[in-house]
Image (tube, rainbow, N blue to C red; front, side, top):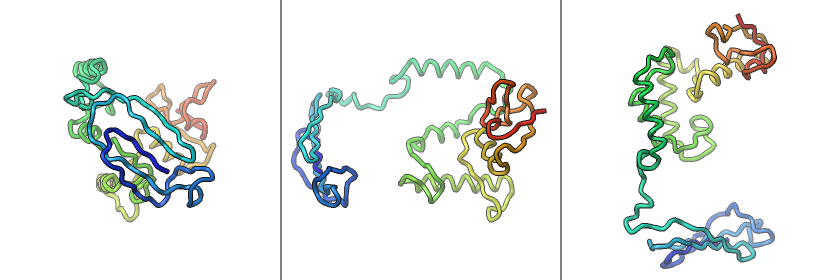
Length: 227
């Protein structure tokens, strides 16, 4: 298969691969996979329209529009939120002001530290990391593995437990999936759960239900008995 995007191209250089995931029915070799990919070197130029041609058995062309490139390249600047979306920025500022002027009595809604804000707002948010350290679905997770392993070690140390005897999962995003993981680890479907009732300070994940509806997933898979 040959793929080429042209915009003031200088030259074309073929790159051979060991099989592409683009089958062309009844065409080419290697079980219908063509193994040549041709790239074009390009240099910047003003353009508002680019044509791409994808050849797979029969010639075809796809045209798409790209933004006009300003003389100063301003179309590609990475603006801050205030410039990119002032409306969203204004809403966030109002919420920040509300938190600053309020007394929050929910412990888990305490102010997030600046260090945590920097970590959760870092380039780590760009990466898929499905799986466990050393056993990821996607590649390029060596530093994600390093970070998660460090987090596991710190969690074990915080509870003064031996890593050779205990394991820890630090991937749960909130209390509900964490509790559900515990339930499924120690209970069988339709086993009994006894927990504090929601109106008296309990949690939804303890199996909250009404006379007409099982509200939480815990109440669907297990039999809650609130007190």
